Length: 52
Length: 275
Image 1 (cartoon, each protein chain N blue to C red):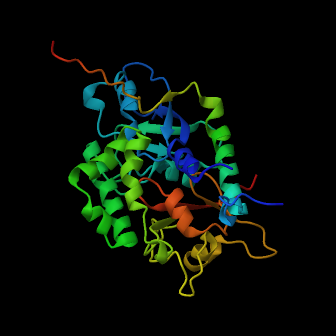
Image 2 (cartoon, rainbow over the protein chains, first blue to last red):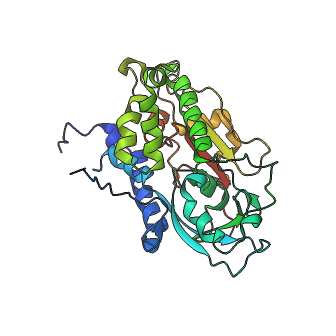
């Protein structure tokens, strides 16, 4: 089996997989059921008004 | 395979669903309804609670409103800790949403610092970044930045602008390849049952023999009781941003990817829930 050279051992390490997996579980746990909640910080939309 | 940059985004965009209710002892002119918000884990309470303040002030007389502060199950919440740290430390094993009580009187001076405006939070945030850079690069990176660059870091956090923040923050995450990491890792270890606010000491990312230090190496040195020995029942969870990284995770990688915007790696040690 040949592996892509761009994948280093660190990228396939168990600790790294664990972090990705747990972050994904965290999103499900903390965010999936609460998408209808209001965001604390509004994303401002900049409207530029130029003088004519 | 996902990219490490995805971790930075996941960390930045972490949200905690929160239900704010007014302390029943506050004097109101009519009933105060609860207020629900998604709080950014990496921000600070005063920065993201303008709406909460406005909501409750609508039902109160101006003379009954003093400095706003927050409490969770009897514990006053320190605004100068990141929101995610407060949650992981005090509420990580409770049912969501996170129930926070809002107070407008009887400010607990013994437990909390006053915060009159967001400029106080900005000063605290920038001083943490400077302290972290002193540990990582002997302050060289932060001192080379201009005032507008410092402002860009703060504005990025305040306005939830990931790209704006990271365009500048990446400079604080660089190091010479031959060093294998920062000079020292900026970290703080929090524990629930302690008079000490947190553990913070000097710790290098690489051993004198040239081996990469791990999260386990750090805890063994700083807080060995937090670790589970062979044959023992696990007593503590080691939480960073609400997750439990494996103890073999390299500390330098954690510092680069799981630090808060203040450039510190905030590690919470909490008792394993018994039920």
